[in-house]
Image 1 (spheres, helix red, strand yellow):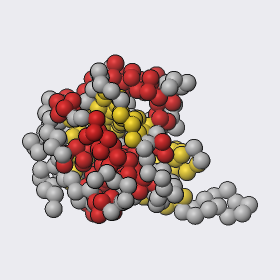
Image 2 (cartoon, rainbow, N blue to C red):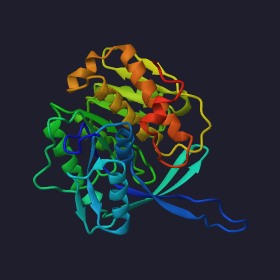
Image 3 (cartoon, rainbow, N blue to C red):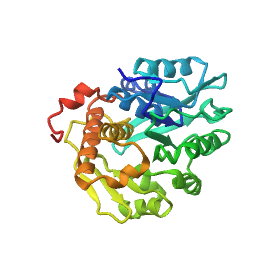
Length: 325
């Protein structure tokens, strides 16, 4: 069993309960039954990595309301530690998710939520076992959580690899300039970025995804992985050749949590294959990245075969026939 006192991966960012469709609307009626499920990109990523065998910690602030309790219980049920998190009477952030042919569409209710008010004093310092931090975006726009996120990453940056996942949500932050302000602040702390082609289309409309991703490298990231749904994933690196992998073909139920599963699986593969410090990224061969990204893309594909953010267990992933040997 992973040691919760010695995490290898930690996630920073939003703690959200998603309301997702629970059936279909009745004829002639507008309402659609909804059910509450644990969500938020960092927490989905945490569960993904934990189900694949990593020791994972969630760093954020959880509400003490019923929704916050739902999130904490979900993490504990999946072996994710909340030892370095905090609790607050502020409300839990809520998201309402509808699946469309273009992907999941989100509406948020998060103003003044517990995760955005995360401001631990002193800032937490994680043990030497740490290999990765994953930062999602939605608590990095407003204070005090934006500064808390920045301070924690800055304190660990030399010894812990930072994976930045913008998780662009125009429904919450429609101002494109605010997204670039966030990126310009946090990209210098990031060793690698994972972004979807949809993220890049919003950030740089009309620009080819690889060209848009290059701007992340110009702002300080060592490498960028662009996920492209059924078209697989593409890696670009500073002064290195690009790498592309295909996604397994599956019957898609929905895409909720697929990108988060990819991130958790990618970090898991790297930890299992000897990743210790940020400089290890540059030593990886193209073959290494093909294997790592195939592992992650396969995990994401399995998630797409079932409703909601439900990442595979290690047994499910290992049994998948398309994994490289």
